Image 1 (tube, one colour):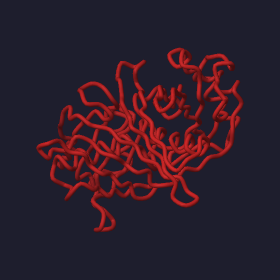
Image 2 (tube, one colour):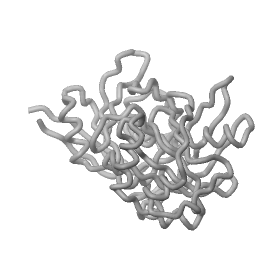
Image 3 (cartoon, rainbow, N blue to C red):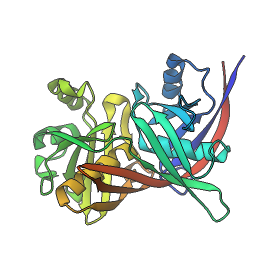
Length: 295
């Protein structure tokens, strides 16, 4: 019988039972694909990661990321949380982790406390921001059971954007953030009406006051009714806002998960590199518990 150890951490928080929980299975090369997916469904977190030997010895590990239903090319809190767990176990030399993921190389710069212990990190999205099609206000309103008049289009219309993991972004009125309630049938209709999205219709809504955002993310078709902290969405959102507001760089403080009772704090940043917009998200992590999976 083989055993693989796992640890869970809460990411984008400085206290237990806040932020976004993550399960990390280390030295998981012996686990097959189907079992990885089953374990992700069993853990029932937004994402679960599996740390494997790197294909390129210049990198620290290959990491596979699964939500409850599918493998993912990139996700923010799993990269920070995985690097945090690896650093605590002595699996990373120095303060930079290079993690091979389907979307490319995720670079995580670790942050440490006065004693040198890891406390979190910053992950740079592996791909530049790509923006795409826009969506009618009524479609967003129908999916979240708010009024079309709650959609704010001063900066941008509801729009597709990605840094490796696709989302639809809509700015809404501040008081509408708490009123969002997903309508699963409406999400299915939207996915059917936009086949180019390949069955994925994940909505990220936010209210903005200068550089502070209050956000929620709903991906019921991927098994995540609501996500308490979404690094892979906050990154392209920062890039989208830089594109629309102008300048060479921009940063935001994002509050997410408040309505779920899991308050999360995310620092999102975007900057220009030639014609591209690159992005990162930062946050702290807290260890929760550990165990073994025997198979």
